[in-house]
Length: 143
Image (cartoon, rainbow, N blue to C red):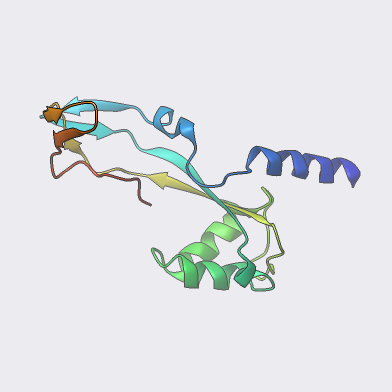
């Protein structure tokens, strides 16, 4: 039991800052086809700690309410298959969240192709850089 707890604490330390990490840019590889930059599909793990308002609630209820990108049935499937875990362990759909639980959801991402054209710098000085960003290129990660 103590060894299991120590491993869990080690995992939690490694995941102090859930969400996107600095190595997110190394996770993907791409190719150019017909003037578009296309990213090969890849797996990505979203992580977050249990929020105070979630404590005591069922994991399925929280995901169905808070992360509405997918229907509850999809989150139920993820919990049952183990791609959505608590403290890196598979749980039941009726699991009640506890303070500081680490939630991890592994997803298979398919990104929309963007232009492969270079981004034009319109103006650059010591205070500002102005670019002509093509509409197909997002300005922040989403998911």
